[in-house]
Length: 422
Image: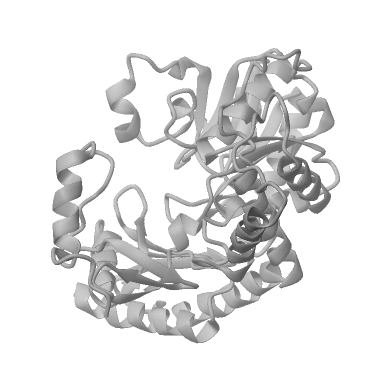
């Protein structure tokens, strides 16, 4: 067992508390956890205690921790560094001089996605991908208002914070936010409600998560997405899919745009397999609303198109395709969902069990039970995440390549731990 210092998890958290913004990290206790090492779907804390990872970095670690595909990228770069050739570039000048890594990644991504999505812009976070989508819709339509839905979570950056529903996230900054630019509707609203909102003629776009993540895996349904598409076409508004969480295999499909086309698609999380990179991909009509750069891009960032992250993202996409991980996520997710419904579906504490692919949630009747179960599971050596605005759900979003026996072991721990809620 590896010991990192003598302070353990609690000591590390105390050190962090003294130097970090108090809002940045929740100091979970009883027991506390500070991650230190990891492989696949197993994480080790600073004391060497092992945990089954059913969260996978909020769904970002599509291939698990430190996968061979990523290690190969890093090893090949080290090998180049020891050869007579100059090492591969790690940081470039993305909006001035592109790297070969950026070109290779975007080309592969476009080839992978449904035919209508033809042009991309890279960023670092999901929030930034959404911001690009919002700006693109404004440029393409000449409008500035957006329809959003109850339970939405589109990030916390100030520019797109009004699009996120949670009042507690927005309250401290209301004096700065332009919430008059947002038209809120209920998730899975009626067609009449949407048409009434769009008939104002000033709606640039409708932004939706095809499966809401932070609220506990709530699916929109293809029929409802088809209605959104129909109304956006009728009123010349852009349909934006925020698939930062759901995209690239999480729900057992590459993207919901395979079934119902969108104008703009936001990807993040799984895209980099744990490295910071995101993308907004759109139709030619949408993306060419941006002016051609004349040396000063009107939307850019120092680390956009970061070459190392591009290489890692490309390796992630290739591994997903070559190992059929999207089909695996769909099939293993169906098995896991069936297992949970059999094990807990009749439990009096449970309100609902739902999921698509390896994006699963157990909703409890009592507020806070998802959060309580998260703490109980941590003590049992399992990492999962509370969800829902009232902490009423537990989300399960493991790596797409998690070994089946390990997943079942984690689910068995969930079943056993539910008994401790009584």
